Amino acid sequence: MKPFWNLLKLLLPLILLSGCDIGEDEVSYHFVSLITVAVDMPEEFRLNETYEIGVTVLEPNGCTEFAGFDILPEDTNIRRVVAIGTEQDDVPCTEALSEVATSFDFICLYSGTYVFRFWTGKNEEGVDQFMEIEVPVVP
Image: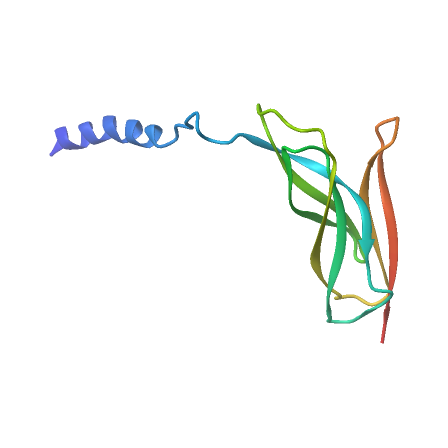
């Protein structure tokens, strides 16, 4: 029985490693932040209701596709929203800009006023810029 376990110890790592090969047919990509150009936001929220927030983002080239949102709470009622895209590596791309209309759902959980900070790119000094929208919560 001991020779069987020794053989298994030798073969198991080889079997596991052979399953991790990334072939040449695989698409390689990385994540990029996409610029928000417009937001369709309600004028007010009500507690415990869900809202669809419309967002228009800019895809910078033909190799980039919108993938989703990174929504981070900066405080109880402050949300930083960054649109995320996937950009293919090592393929020829068109340089055509395209606007994509998309949305996300938001559930109002706290009273007060919400502040949404949508990422709009970087300025000349490389500092992140945001479009800020305030939405009050009404009874």
